[in-house]
Image 1 (cartoon, helix red, strand yellow):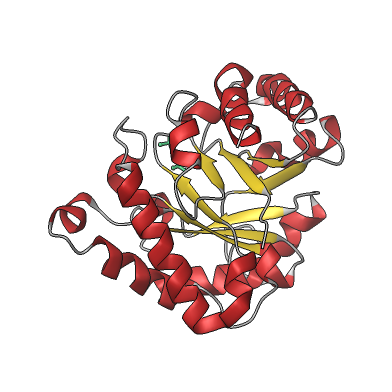
Image 2: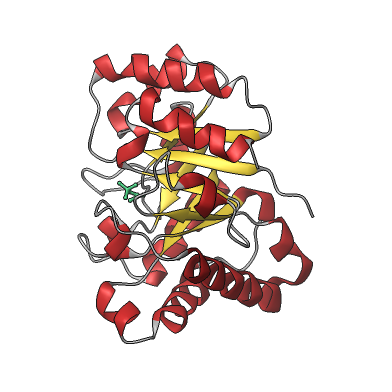
Length: 248
Ligand code: PGA
C-alpha cells in the first residue's frame, strides 16, 4: 500500500507571533510538493494564529490531556485543539514521557482522546541511550508500542514516530540500518496485532533530522516521513527536508 510521505515540524517551546512568517514560508514551499503531507506543531498559544495565517494547512498540538474536559489546571484537551483549528496532535514525546512522568497508559489515553476529537495522532516512542547500548532497543520500543497504541483506530489517522532519545537535539543519528531494523520491527508488531491495517500506518523517524541527512533517513526501509524539532523552526532549514521527502 502506498503511503504518502509525512514531514512534521515540532516547534517545542519555541515561537512567538513573529515566527508565523516562517510557518507561512514553510507552507508556501510545501505547496509545490504535493506528494508530501507537511504539518507544523507550534506551541498551543500559536495554534489559532497559525491556522488563521495559513488556512487549510495542517497545524497541530504537541500534547493533549486524556480527558475531554475537567479540572486539570494548565492542561489542554483534544477537543480544544480541534476547536482552535488543529488537525493533529503529537502524544508521548519523550520530553513528556521523561520530563512529566507520562506512562504508556497515559499516552494511550491521550491518543484515544485525540482520535475521538477527530484529530490525527502522532504517537512517539524511543529508547534511552543505555537501552540502545545494552542491545535492548527493539524490545523496549515494542513494549512502548504495545502499551501505548490504542486498540481500534483509523490507521490513516495514527502515525508512530520512532525517536531514539539520545538522537533528539544532539546531532547524533542512528545508522540507516538501525532505523530500518526498528521501523521493520514496529511494522511487524503492528501487523501481528492489527493485520493489514498496519500497512496503512505511517512510521516517522525523529531525532536530529536535517537537510543533509534527510535523504538517507527518509529512504530507509519502512520510514514514511520525519518528525523534526530544531530544523523545523525556519523555512531555510525545514524546506530542504520536505524537498528530500518529495524527491523519493
Ligand atoms: P530534533 O527533535 O529534530 O531537534 O532532534 C526531534 C523531536 O524531538 O521531535
